Length: 246
Image (cartoon, rainbow, N blue to C red; front, side, top):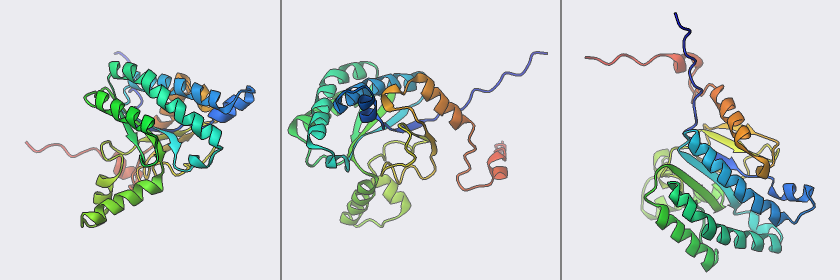
């Protein structure tokens, strides 16, 4: 009798990542901080390809928070320029790879150049369905909740959990199964406050530019060892579904 085949570990449908550590990666190498952000773009491309290869269907990344405007003017300006350049350079290949790009966050205050790049990227990749890549740019979890509540109030819709979820900026995808934060920090920094209520979390000391396929696999393996109960007991989670009635 042949040995039973081991079940493959579950793969998260939706992974969200706080891409932290670009500036420290550059500082360790006596480089300007913007060099770390440029390296971070390459890491994101690598991570998106790896997620697709492993069967992940949604990847959401925290690229620029609403609090990041408080950073030095030179760094913010450099980030905006890098973002605009990266859109023009990387979007055609992402489109060819079947990636649908969605940009999540407040667009008021962004430059015309950045807005044009965002709108063109979303329009070009809209039909794609191989991988949804949500880029949270000028985003904050509190902003997300407030804008959702304000939208409901303006339409005279009762504020309920269901209605709020439907008005959130990520209503087009399921909530993240796994949230990863790189860079050694143990906080979520105003990222997906509503959507991560029952997400599993993995924190790694790896700086974002050094985050590779091996680190992704370690995070997915950790996810596979978790028991997701969603408020239930272990016994309830393990109860097999009732057979269908003929």
